[in-house]
Every structure is written in C-alpha cells, then in structure tokens.
Image 1 (cartoon, helix red, strand yellow):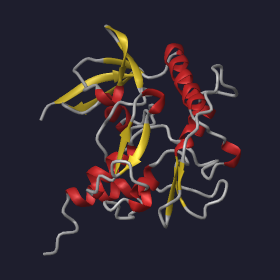
Image 2: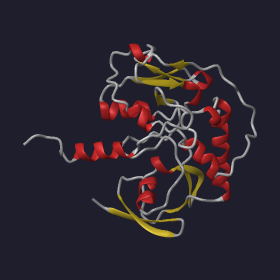
Image 3: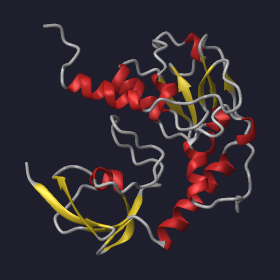
Amino acid sequence: MSVKTLTIDGKMVTGVAGTSVFGAAWEAGIQIPRLCHIGGLSELGACRLCLVEIDERPRLQPACMTEVEEGMVVRTDSARLHAHRKLIVELLFAEGNHVCAVCVSNGHCELQDLATSLGIDHVRVSYQHPRRQVDASHPRFALDLNRCVFCRRCMRVCDEVEGAHTWDVAGRGASLRLIADLGQSWGSAESCTSCGKCVQVCPTGALFAKGSSVGEMTKNRAFLQYIVTARAQHQWIRK
C-alpha cells in the first residue's frame, strides 16, 4: 500500500494510493464544500460543489472522484471556485421550492449553510417554481420533493447500509424525482424497513420526521460512520 504526497492549499499532505483528494484534504483538516458526499457512503460526484483546481489540468476536477497522485498541487479556494460554487447553490435554490422560513430544517440545513458561507443573499437566475409532490403516506416520516436537491444520499444509505434499496430516481432534467419502490407511495413501499437512515442523512428538509415544526428537524449524521465502522470491524458479531 503506497502513500502519495501532494500539496493542498500550500499544505503538504499524504494520502494512501486510491483515496480521493477530498478524503486527503478532510484528513488534513481542509474542508471542501459538498452536498452529495457523506462519510461512509460511496462517492457519486453529483453535486459538483467539491470541484477543485489542480495544476496542469485546465478543467476543474471533482475532489471526491479524483485519486491522489504523487506531487499533485491542488487548490480548494479561489475566486474561480467561489464563483462556480455560488452559481451551483443559486441554481439549486431556483430549481426547487426552498422556502427556509417555513422549512422543518430551517437553521439545520446544509444547503442553507452553504448559501451563508458563500455570501448568497439573493438568486441571480429565475425561480422555476416547480409543482412537486409531498408524500406523507409513511406512518413516521414524510418526503417533500420541493426541498430535494437530488444528492442521492438517501438512495445510497438505503442500498449500501440498510440493504433495502427502497429509494430510486425517475425522470430526467427538470422531471427528475425521487421514487420509492418503482413509483409506489412511501407508505406502500414493502421494501422500506422504517429505519429512518435516509431521513438522517438528508442534507435539507426533504426527508423529515412527522410532527416536526419549523426549525425542529435536526439530523444525526454521526450515526452513519459509527455503523459503517462497527460493521467493518465486526463489532456486532457474537462470539
């Protein structure tokens, strides 16, 4: 197992061959903005917020999907990257119906945090105001597609950790939507175990516990790394 040495934001860091630039940066205390990434799940490279600049590569590269290389020089913060990330977040706000003032995750939302960190106080593109559905058929949880950013965290945690694969996506472009069991209502999805893992990894208020009012829905992201680590170390196997 070889170790690569690279430079990120002027800081010498190391990473095991095969690991991502995002992982090496995170281990070194350099945090790169992201929405689709969450520790313990496979990488998807969907949100493009973690794009970075790499010397001798003219195009921006997704840090979560780019493996570390010896001598690589990476920049995670520049005017070009800031403009790129700011536009992505503005587009996410414009293509959905993210009304923070009445959202259950107001004050606990990763999209909201990103907007604040990027200095976004208005959106420069036209709002689409799509007509999206709310599925409250599940006895414990609800899905509000108006707040979904299609990061697919829910799909991956359901598939890779819970092993149920209840969630999937259908449609393309503006018609893209999250579905349960090939288009069933969530409450009718026989594969759902009601574990709530999808709710906890959702970065916004799209998936939430019923009964939550404005600002009351907080998510516990730490549980996922605990489960993944415990399973890898066989801590739950009876001896």
